[in-house]
Amino acid sequence: MRLAAWLMLCSMLILSACATREVAFAPITTSIDEPFSVTGRLSVNMNGKGYVANFDWQHALQKDQLAINSPLGSTLAKIVRTNTLVTLETEDKTWQAADIENLTQQTLGWPLPLSGLSWWIRGLAVPGENDEVASDGTLSQQGWQIRFIRAEDSMTTYPKRIEMNRKDLNVRVVPQNWN
Image: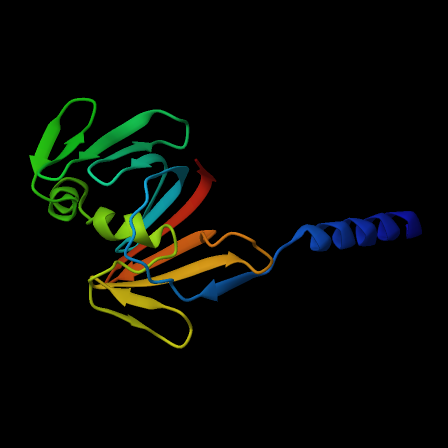
């Protein structure tokens, strides 16, 4: 019995040493948009219904390509944004519109704030847009309340998690692999 208790105590100490404390931080302001490529997870909770997906996103100044994948890896939708057009493509249908927010609201039932998210995923406020930062670091911008979370001992400026809330819609983005 004493051996089991000792092993449990050692396991708890080892696991607690590996845990990192997460902290909220305020966004950084810049006006320089840099290309990036990132994969990660996305969860959406709207009116009590939850959805989970993986994503693969390539962002450039003139174009975004975003693949939304099931947890098992199959592509559910592809979104391509150029300066003048946004296309959402699923296995059996294609939609087009002038902006991503209206297109995803019509097709998915919730607006994907891709124009803002291309800044927020990097812990940045969208330049030239009205914003307010609360004392806890929460950013209010484009009708969203955005919290940036990172590991306390993180050396990167990128958030570990972005939590976005708007009315009955909660979106969490967890970037995992940056290129």
